[in-house]
Image (tube, rainbow, N blue to C red; front, side):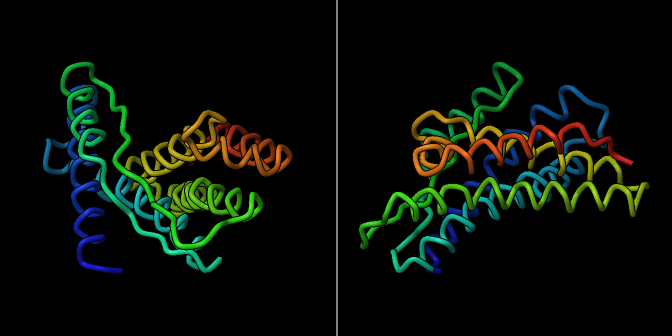
Length: 189
């Protein structure tokens, strides 16, 4: 991973963490902006990074070149929607894949990798909530954020991951979508 790509990831994570912190400190009784930022950076940042790097890792395994690039307009839009409307619409950037023509099967699996990573993180946060009930707030936020990120990205609308997954396999898309809905019904300990 090049330093330029790391910079794009860092700027994206910091910006979306700022946007989500703006929303959460306006609508909840969390312990101040700084404490909320750290919690959001951990949960949202981890979910975002693992999602994008999962796409990148699978693309590289298929022999393609893959790099994350921030989208400045999307990052600005995330902060503006948080400040003006009290919700975050984040389109911070994407993994760009090039250098090899991918099959529909490969493209679908690359697209599914991001939401699958969010699903695994949501499971880990749910388990953390059960094991460490004193940190339920952080783990609950982590579970919710990763369930939202994965489910949102599975929407079968271009350019979302779901459009590529459903184009590859309707069954795989349906199974993933249903799994997210089912996991959303699991109460946190």
